[in-house]
Length: 129
Image (cartoon, rainbow, N blue to C red):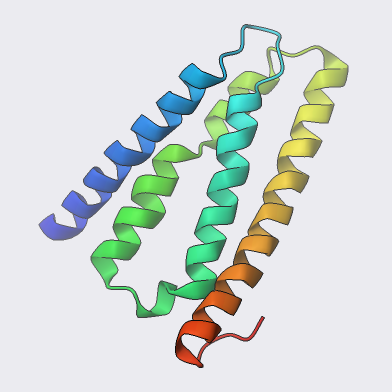
């Protein structure tokens, strides 16, 4: 239990720091398109799907906890999407939500297929792309 909590904590600290770095690199003001939030959510969708496709079942539980709910859970946030969206004008609001959903799903699909291909190429086993 303690080991699991530490894994989530460490992964979460790394993910939150990465998220903050991207927010600093791509700042946006109130009413401006939140590119940093879109980017982290699309990257996070891709990364989690890539891990699931390639190695998830063979990874030890602490690594899955550190990477899934820890690192990627703190890196991506739906609350940031919601908070950013409500500050936008109605056309940008709807466009941002649609782009976020579609880009996240496409990134997850590509990540899962890529991860499956990598996992299969590395071991000859697992999911075929």
